Length: 240
Image (cartoon, rainbow, N blue to C red):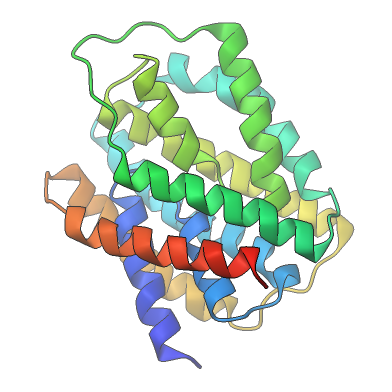
């Protein structure tokens, strides 16, 4: 058992759940850095997402930040597309390239903080359905929840504030991860033999992060460290 991996796993879960994310891009980055097989990466990341995003969602939901009118259009298209995306078979090399691109997007998301507006407006139905379908498909295909992209989009489009976007993102990740995992199960996969240990550590980090996110504790410096880890993992994926 690699104890450094478990320590980093807890840190990633903590940081992501503090802003309403499941952390799949971070888990995938760690797995890439530790040279794990792509075949096991998707199912492992989605499984961890279920527990971490679930704890994050409960925290933000109890805080009264969930807007059903905001999130439902995204879920309508993202859930079935996550299922079909998970059943899409891609070559390991192409998988690494696509994952590397999404890790770079995750780095940009961590470093760039969109301006929060005092007033929000209702989200556009057609655009929300399209965004949900797009993010859902790639979420299932590479093993992420899609929240790392959804939440800044919601804020940039003035559809919600930061806390509301975090609540919507957590639920989005939870449903997409479940659909993606079921899609992988349908085509057959072998679970990672250490997944239960990983879940225990990630869940602990997720609970602490979700609690921290409910209070305005600053994790900015730690997020910069996470961005650096994601960047290194992305570079490794492009050149291996």
